[in-house]
Length: 220
Image 1: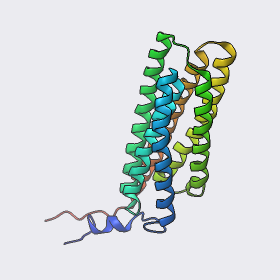
Image 2: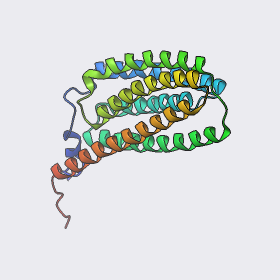
Image 3: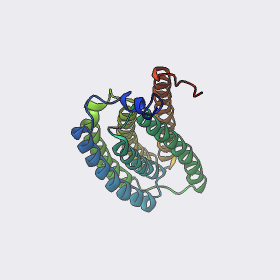
């Protein structure tokens, strides 16, 4: 039959409470713009200041831009598609964290002292940007895996920014690069942990969809 249980029913399962949630989309567009701007600012500052933690935080901003764009693309779709998008985001975040670990080791071997003043100033700016995003996303933190993944990324970013500011103080106080390296490693750990959480939520939702799908009759 056309539009039988294997095709038409899937759309009806797992729909959000409000399709095409305008408030959710508006918040995502604002957060996307903020994160895109901060990626450019922080990456440029990280390269100029030879800071591993600023580069790690900048890549986190870039990851959030991709996450918000994916979330906008699947808003209003069936739960299975939103869960799949969250699964892709979790895997991306996990890979990003592993990449940051590798780049941090490379900078530690190079042994160049980062500019603490630049780290501190950009870290504070990034903290303000991420706190603004986290406050906007707070009311959406208990949604499906897709929405929770956006909240987890925003929360991790704010924590990471505080760590970058502390790293700047550590570099300034000790005259060594190790506080910067330590914070970059912490940011990588947050990315890996967040990726694992998102993947877990998404897998649980995909399993719940499979359990509630009606069995398709075998064709004769």
